[in-house]
Amino acid sequence: MNQFQKAALVLTSVFFPLLAVEVTQAATPVAESFPVVAQRTALNLTQQGSGQLKIGNRPTRNINRASVIVRPNGTVDIGLTYADGRGTMRFGGRLVSQTRDTLVINLSNSGNADASGRVIVSYGPGNSIKSISGNGRVDGQPFSIQFRGSSQGNVGNQPINLSQAGNGLFTLQGRPNRDINRASVTVQANGNAELVFFLAGGTQMRFSGVLTSKDAQTLNIRITSSGMADASGNIRVEYGANNSINAIFGDGKLDGQDFSVQFSR
Image 1 (cartoon, rainbow, N blue to C red):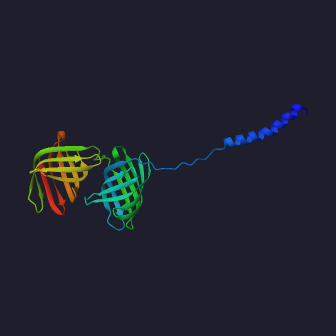
Image 2: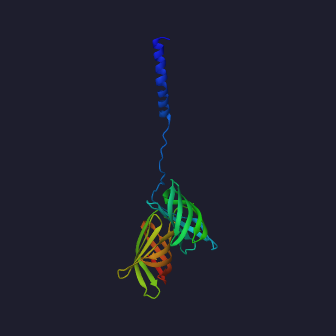
Image 3: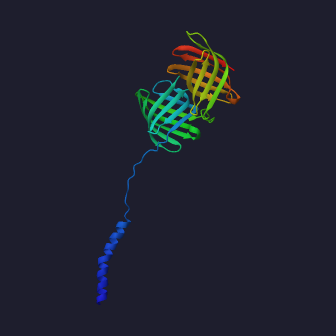
């Protein structure tokens, strides 16, 4: 073996192991850890439909409307309106995960009552709700929810602003009757509604509520409050072209007293 062959052998034994180590180290992937954070996009969903709420041994309640509010901080409110018009069941919770068409929610309360469980909401365009399903416990009782949005669409999608001069009468038990000379009706995109009756003498009577059904000529509104006062009842609004009001009539309870309203153009 000449001197050049010996030198080549030495170089091979010295440098090739180092090169092998460097290649091995370069080829080794580095594992990185990224936290998984639920997407939180604010939403205000509302939908007519049909469903049922079952709680323990209580009678099953039919549902004809649902709403879901998701706030940027991840808190969620769910409202289930009873088909008989006798109130709304509300749940609070936190968003667990969100995709472009599904919400997963962990429940924490129902008003002042303790609640736990999981609810899955499938939603679509126009702030509509396709379905809601879930189960858990509320005040120690097992419950389950099933709701499917109506194929007729979301009654609260299109805002409505109606106003009309006319004549009418507002009656409240134990108080003098009041003449009405103008009325206005506002329905927001989420289905919340406000009615204002302008009374003779310059005062106003306001009601807030929820739109329960709508067609090309009629709005049906379930009353939930009057300013800071408790109120309940149902009011029907018949409307026409150019945001006009043809007639309004309805009745209910205001602070425990019977009321009725009639108005026409």
